[in-house]
Image (cartoon, rainbow, N blue to C red; front, side):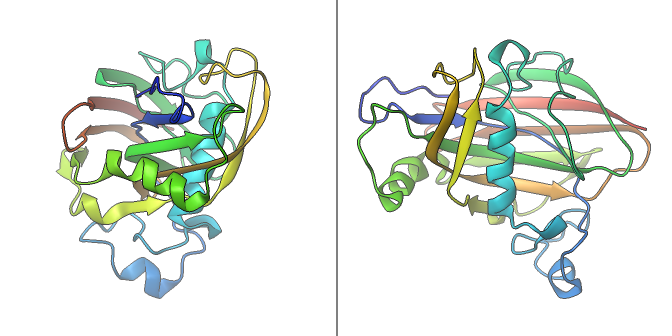
Length: 233
């Protein structure tokens, strides 16, 4: 995660994340069967698994991540012990890291879909930030995720065409607690948005699974290597 020190970009925060598995519930048959880039278990980029687009799910992921205090946050978790915090609904979110090598163990309820972004940059509007337009904010965060190097394997099988899974989130707000990741006073902040690469996978069958992904931005100023050892039961 990058934390720019300039006042102009004070609200700019980048985090690279991981998750796995999404049921394609309400996606249309045509959308679910086309454009999945050769990845039959992954929702196509233009689909609406569980009634939401990739952009809407990205916003929901950030609202979950920022709602958890830093000392128990799945992003800062080095073992997977906090992976269950804040989970609800049909989709189970997995967190990423602030860079480097991370290995986690996590139990996922059977039948839960899984969501993960490979590389993403978020903006949270701080009270001291200038009143940027949404177009200006998108232009600020986009360069971090342009032309990255990405890889992902699920149970040893490589996911194809990862660059085709880029999304730009819908505009959203976040409500943060005491001791939050952003160092802000507790409360609700907006506008927020992100730009990144997400995967949505169908629920994994009960048993043991491994998800491994790597990501680096175009100038290699940020990189990560994350492995999840999942138990689905």
